[in-house]
Length: 147
Image 1 (spheres, helix red, strand yellow):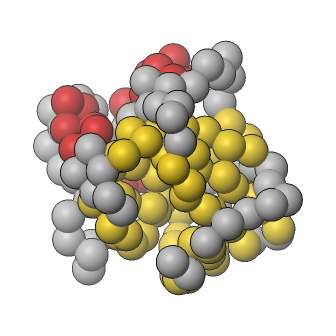
Image 2: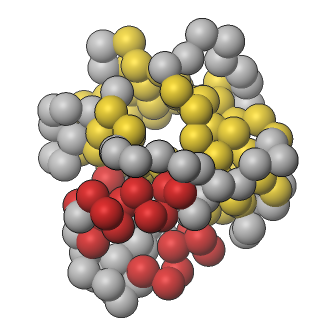
Image 3: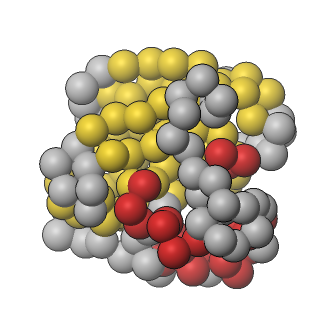
């Protein structure tokens, strides 16, 4: 699967998650994930990957078949197969989820339900992301992922 699309974030964050994995956060505050402890908890549980970029702006997301040279990897559980990749501010919460492509900054991809290793790399405002099957579904990070 190779695709690319532009996103704009005013929270300097890209998020990757299966819509089903964050359903338990829908009634939480819209910016629950900006609390580092909550963000890390969801990453460690394999529910989402948050990539902190250091600055707001427009980014080109490149979903590629594989990445051999990457900045990092995190594991996620894909339970429904409906993956959102987009601006952090469009994360499920505040009684909203990214379900209307016209009102969010991001895109959806479909993957078979399974555990995946999400590899990522940043080159300037280009973000490269790949998904590969994995036996792992959890992470053990102590601080936010920064690109």
